[in-house]
Length: 393
Image (cartoon, rainbow, N blue to C red; front, side, top):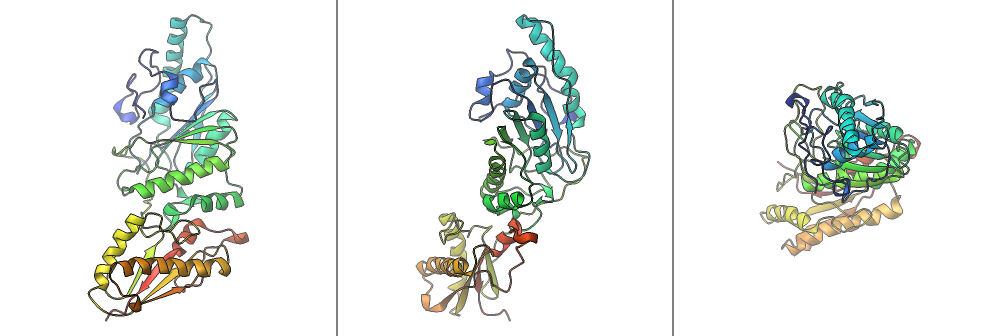
């Protein structure tokens, strides 16, 4: 959808594509660059938050950045650049002004302004200086810099590694967006984005040592951040362009957020089918989120079960929200959904017992924080279906 600008290339060491100083003839029109986004073409402040950091591919800017740098400068509105790292920092160069009113002279002055005031920041200062990544604070800084009706472009993988959204926590990557929003809202941590227009770019794309994320994991991260933006009163759009480039070397370390591990099947012991994996359910229902993926995974389990004739117990577990009245039948129905797939694969129903433990399964973790707030990562860890086979010898 978006082309990469290549008009004024910065030095290779900057690890960002040159954006400022493009001539009108070499830049895409603003309308073309903003197509498919909710960014406004009206005169408005612009904030670009950039994650030039470890574990994130070398920055690939959407065309909207170059187009809006030009139009924002031309309108005399504030351009702000935000560094995304463990302690995000905002840079606010002076606004553009000129006495030239004719087209070519004004365009030349804008290019000189951008090359003098914006490129130096992109060249060095947006590179991470502090370990870890705090994307939420960077978004808050961008929101404060633009004000209502402003444009914000957030370029990062979205994998924050510090509280309150620590993607190192098991379950966080696939937590329902509504859980994430409720958790942040309970602590008054939703950024004030009323009237802001936000574009998320690069979200879900990573660079080693951060493992590659699959499509479901990328979609979950994007959905979480879209929900945060919308909860703050902003409009959210997504740049779907992939980015598989290597990370810029030599920057401060960022912790790895491990994706949910694949299920290992055996014909003995306990097998945990996590909601964060392929056998996940639609929120509040016993319907598989991705039926084809669930069947493919359960087919592997069925193959193992066909090697024996032992009785198995299938236990459904939920998070603590909703109470026993909701969770007990829901967990039982989810266990039954797994058993139903196995039955369709030739496993006799007489070999299986289904149980709904709700929020009382012994292997669960505490998913409630101070004040009764539901902890998204821990709640997701508790949403599982457990298959108990005979104990391994």
